Image (cartoon, rainbow, N blue to C red):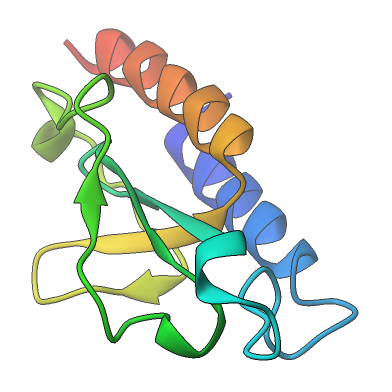
Amino acid sequence: MDVREFNETIHVAHNKHFENSEYGLVDPKESPNGNIIYHLYSDGEITSQKGGWAYLQRSQFADWSNPTIRGYDKVPFNFPKKANSDYTYAVLTYDECVYYRKNMIDLIEKYK
C-alpha cells in the first residue's frame, strides 16, 4: 500500500463511524465519562478525550505508549480533520488507532 491508498483508507475508516449518525463515535447524548473518543494524528500520536457533550471542550490526553512517530514529516499523511496548520487527525476506535499507527510506521520505513 502506498501513502495515497493509506490516506484513503484512513478517510474511509473515519467516515464509516459517521454513516449512521452525524456524530459518529461522539454521541452528545451519552455520558462524557462513558464515551471516550480517540484521535490518530498525522504525526502518529494517539490521544483520548471525553466524548458526549464534553467532546472538544475538555483536556485531551496523550497515549504515552503511542507517541509521535519519528520521520512522520517525510511522508504526506493527510487525515480527514484539520487540527491546526501542521496536523490532521481521524476519529477512530482505540484499536483502529493502534492498527493504523503501525501501518504508518511501515510506510515511513519504506520512505527512508
